[in-house]
Amino acid sequence: MSLIEHPTSPLTMNLPPLRVLVAGFQHETNTFAPSLADWAAFNRGDGFPPYQRGEAMLRKLRPINIPIAGFVGVAETSGWQITPSIWAGASPSSYVTEDAFERISTDLLDDVRAALAQGLDAVYLDLHGAAVAQHVSDAEGELLARVRALVGPDRPIVASLDLHANVTARMFEQADALVSYRTYPHIDMADTGALAAELLKRRLRLGHRQAVAVHRFPFLISLNAQSTWTEPARGIYSHIPGLDDTHHAVLSFCMGFPAADFEECGPVLWAYADTEAHARSAADALLGQAGQAPIWRCDIPTAHDAVARALQLVTSPDQAPVVIADSEDNPGAGGDSNTTGLLREFVAQGLGKRFPHRVAFGLLFDPEAAAAAHAAGVGGVIERGIGCSVPTHAGMSPAPLQGRFTVRALSDGRTVLTGPMMTGAPVNLGPSACLEIDGVLIAVVSGKAQLLDRVLLAMVGIDANAMQVIGVKSSNHFRADFTPMSSHVLVCKSIAPMAADPGDLPWKHLSPHTRTRP
Image (tube, rainbow, N blue to C red; front, side, top):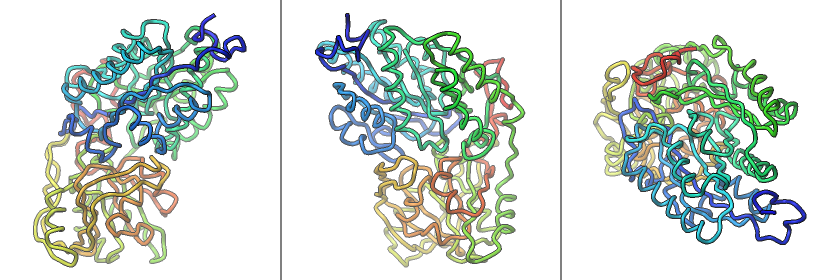
């Protein structure tokens, strides 16, 4: 009787603890975006913790709300022996370079070989699921296949996935179990890692893989329709725990990242259960709720119209702020957080003149402007353009915003996230500043990260709660920390790299069976 077959059986209580190697690879690839994810991007530590390996990885990541921390927590409670390998994360962007992917893969596979020599029972991978490398379109499927080739067919491999994973047939083939987040903004990341540990226990108890039933959707879903804070996603995901219980299954639904130009981009849902009948009934039940295309359609206003609407919505100086999401320049979806479409509307429509020093915008990635602000000092004035014009699906984005900017505050760009999303994660955005023009306060940074936490404004002296209007470069993650303190939340199109409507993108490799709109 082997440990792998019956890890919790009374007959195995005198056997050594389960030995599990843990590792992570996180990148969300927008193949239409301008900037590549090179090796340096995985080491900067701007939107994700920097590259970690070995015991240092566990020390750095254990306190953060990310999947690997949740998995390790269950593992330690269960008495498992953890072998830490690598954890690599870079802010969403265009392709992962071949060099970066192969460095990450080499380190991971070297650690797997070493663990096999010492005795290894299982592997857990903290994956995103929507990575595309320059030389490998299904990056996670490739990584899983390489690990599988080393550990053989019988050692379990389980992985957690981001809700935006584009889950491929190869990923299902190579992994014993996959499980995804159930919230967007992602506030259940550690919980998902814990659920991956539960799926590993089920796999070990059975002695073979659970049955899986999979449904792939024939259409793409806009990121702006995916928030589990709004319908239809809120209602659909709220029903998943009940469906799990009813069908004795574990369900996942990845709405997909709709800007990765490869064949298997798109939404997928699946269910694991001990029997094929239970897996199929669970997946069919969820498909009945989520698979109707019309429920996912959404209309998104232009930046001009969104700002005009915000002016109408602010009716009192004591009112909680109106938040406008600059969704198309979201650095959490492949934008570089440097375009000025929404910011220019703030200035052109006189938001700061109507509400002086009570209008905020961020985070604007402009290292040169941040350096100029530090050279000028607090109270100094710099005259220059800020932001950048970049190629987009709609042509070039608006030009940099030219003007005279007063330096209101300076920062080294270091802080720790305190909101519900990635709580406890350290952030290092380099020299940063609060610049003011015509009453608009702009958080300018030297590293790329979406504005998903109010502490990122506080870092440069901006009190989000005191604002009347806030522009955030984010699609949905901002909602976790900003929605509870806002009066209204708007989303806009601003001519930037991440199309709010997937149908606006120039697809070349998407399956001919997948529609770009619901």
